[in-house]
Structure formats: C-alpha cells, structure tokens
Length: 238
Image (cartoon, rainbow, N blue to C red; front, side):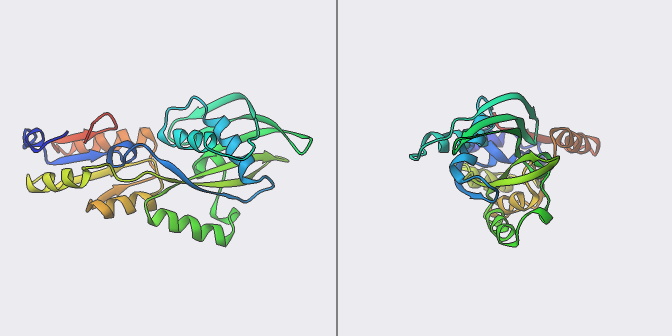
C-alpha cells in the first residue's frame, strides 16, 4: 500500500492485523553476530546452519546463507540428510562434517527454543544477558543445537537484525489519522522482540511466540467479535 489514497479506501476497517517479519520489517534481515557456546567454533556453526537453511524460503534463512557466502575464512562443508522443516519453529536434519581430521555426525536443530530443546537453564548468564539485549532492540534470535548422548546440547546463538520497513511508520500514522483504532501484531518471534518492534511503531497489541495455527485462531477470534479487519501478510508492499 504505497499512498494515502489507497488506505483511505479502507475507511470501514477498524482493525489491522500485521505479521512482523517482512511486513513491519524489511524482510531482508542480516546476521549480526554469532556466539559459539559448545565445542565448535563460529565458522563451523555457521557452516552447519547454512547447510540446514539451504533451500529454505524464510528471510532468516537468507541472512544465514548470505553470511556464510561472505565468510572470508575457510568454510567447513557439511552434508545434510533427512531434513525436516517445522513451520514456525525451524529446521532439523542429520548433519555430517569433518573437523581436525575427525568426522562428526548427529542430528542438528536450528530455530527457536521449542525446536532446539533449549531453555534458560541451559544458557549461561552472560549469554542470557546478550540475548535480552538483542531482543530489546527488536533483533531475533536463532539457536543451533545437536544431539549428544541422548541429550540436546546448545552449540551457537545467532543474532538476526531485520530493520523496520521503509515507510511503515508513515503507514501507521495514516491509519491513526483515519481512525483505525486497533493495530495488532501476530508473530512467531519471541515476545520480547515483538514488543520492541511494537514500541517503535506505537502499536499497543503485540503477541509473539505464535505458531501459524495460533495466528489463525487469533484471526478467527477477531472475526467472532465482529471486527472489520484487514490482515497484512508479507505479500503487501508498504
């Protein structure tokens, strides 16, 4: 929606529901930082993450793959089998690679806490503070873990920055001027990251950590209470 005249045609709408990534944000994220916390260095963790994201369509996957392609250090080559993508959570696969004349093979996971089996108890205080700092800026966090001796071990933490979409603040201001009273964010990202984006845009209703099914349930709730709403997914150009 590129001009005021377009949105003025929506004067009957009282609620706009936004996705976050690619709608409120640019959809062209950049990997900002990697923290290696396991037994493998950053280059190996980046190579494994890139192997897992190969062929994925989510913008975060493109950020990982671009960081890998721009890496000037020697890259580890990892092979992937039995890949499984879990919508709204991430990706997992059997990964094998060689490092220091040793061959490693195990099940690896890249995504959110739920998929990777990561909890706050398994992260050191220093890394928890860094994660909180990232999320307060609206950045997103991906975890990389693998199976070891029947347990899941955290190997790396990725910080992904996806800046606000150009013109989105003007769009929100125009919606306010037109009396569209309800602006809502429904996102699969962590609640803290979603809150940060909502604060930047002055959006009061923001819900994070939602699966695609839960997003649909929220939309059905709005329909049930007779809101006249407009859903802005990533296909809209603002």
